Amino acid sequence: MFDLNALIRDNVKNLKPYQSARLEFSGAAELFLDANENSFGSVVDGGFNRYPDPLQHELKQQIAAQKGVSSEQIFIGNGSDEAIDLLFRAFCRPGLDQVVTMPPTYGMYDVSAAVNDVAVVPISLTPEFAIDLPRVKAALQPPVKMLFICSPNNPTGNCFDAAVIVDILNHFNGIVILDEAYIDFAPNKSLLPRLAEFPNLVILQTFSKAWGMAGLRVGMAFANPVLIEVLNKIKPPYNVNSLTQQLVLKALEQVEAKNEMVRQILTQREWLTDALQTLNFVLKIYPTDANFILIKTTHPGEIYHHLTEHGIIVRDRSRVPLCEGCLRITVGTPEQNQRLIDSCHQLDQNL
Ligand SMILES: *Cc1c(COP(=O)(O)O)cnc(C)c1O
Image 1 (cartoon, rainbow, N blue to C red):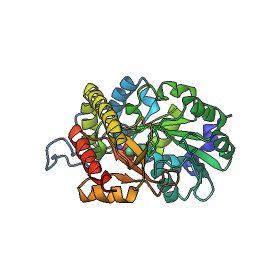
Image 2 (image 1 turned 180 degrees about the horizontal axis):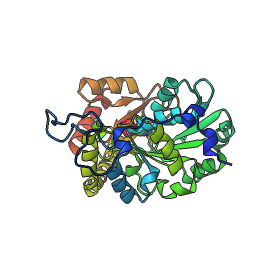
Image 3 (image 1 turned 45 degrees about the vertical axis):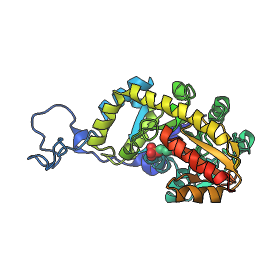
Image 4 (image 1 turned 180 degrees about the vertical axis):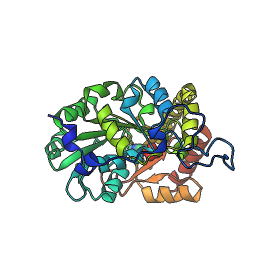
């Protein structure tokens, strides 16, 4: 049986959270003289002399409406990276507990684990980049507290079979963190509509990719309200600044503009896939559900070097196990993609 309370670290269970002024009194008043803010105002316009809403109520209301969840199921962080770190701090005792990852995958899981002195048990994907279900299931036992699933996966680009993820959710009595950073590019593949079925599920999404707001640092975690409460309890009180909250609210009003960009990116992804196919040095183009394409090449080092010389930077993943010879390419605009392909053809004839 899944028992969330038993997974929470004792120090977290017992701690009395910081009571910010805005939490203690959050109603309407004429005179706020409780937070030692500058009552005269700010040297810049925008009402920035006031502390931001610590729980981002307005933002959560809008996100809840768009995503079909309740505000109590939402945590908002300074990037999804903050949510990842808080999950470690809430559930994993340094030097004792462990987490499972499925490489090749997002590098932040390992970094966050190391920062928190938590050992990682890596269970490789299969050579076809599928979850190795028997081995993963066998690994999911104490002292493993959490499992990271990145779907669509970075850097491979593929989504994992929903039935396999559900199987794991039903099998594992720890926390399953499903990182859906790229889910906007994979229509109908999110597990968010089924969130309420799984008390051990945390879904991560972000404003950094499809929404084009990586510079603002805003990530979301969706989970059952008790788990969200734990994250709220240990987060820095004002973790999302007020300018960011305003800008994300504005962005949410323009969901159609985001969707239009996603459509354009998907069109370009197809164009780029076709164009890459014409190159001799491309051995394989992996199927992708994200805004990037992983390709296996004959000469990753030479290609990377050649592109860099021409002012084009891609991600060299060729030293990552299972990604030998691979480069990861973010889908660009039509002009950017054309320039990339022109430069590739130039090299392709001389290899
Ligand atoms: C880009 C990315 C994120 C986004 O992280 P933020 O901190 O929200 O910018 C999360 N997970 C994966 C797998 C990513 O590739």
